[in-house]
Image (cartoon, rainbow, N blue to C red; front, side):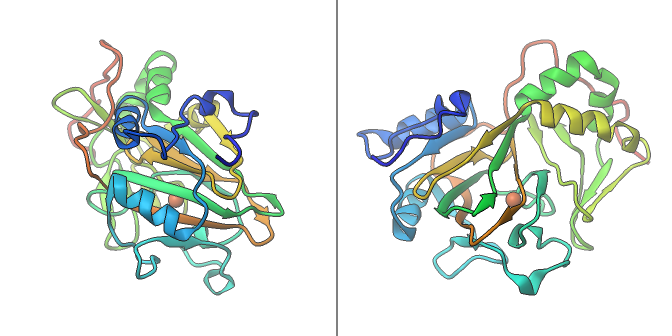
Length: 266
Ligand SMILES: [Fe+2]
């Protein structure tokens, strides 16, 4: 096996699964259901990443994906300054949900390192189960507004009206967020965005992946971000639907589900 997930991240090392072990798919499924995150290594090349992705998900294509279904994430100068293309630049990426502007964002995202940046380019991950519990205690009014339907619009003209936290009839929660120029907010919610941003940062984990290492996350529970970088950083991304059953969203502790302030925002 290649190197383990960096020791600077003991909490994330707990999520590591050896995908070469017997029954790895079941272990991955269990961990995704319970924690929404798996870290992996020993992904030697693009075909290994594709094989692993295909074991756990039905890949869904993306605007930028290659014919094999994977997307190569690297700095492409031709997309400089274009809204919605920041992932293909070298800049910092604020915590976000992948494909927040489509009706149903992909449930799973696998991101694997092919080549490290010269400087920077670390992955930053936030578990929104922790963010939700945090806001329920510190800022219940913010949480109620962030759960109010149609208080955000994500994407371009063909984007999606939504809310940051969606509570299902089963009292499970899912998150949807972007913070770039393609996010618009109801004036009711806007004053609470700093509170949300602070909570997301408070629960952020830093993951400095080496070549062959990857993370696999539940895109309705974890937000991902990236620090700015220099050099030829090159990652591979797979998006898709899990090949195993996953209940919608994530569970929250009994009694902390916060009802929206309004059923429908103006
Ligand atoms: Fe992303």
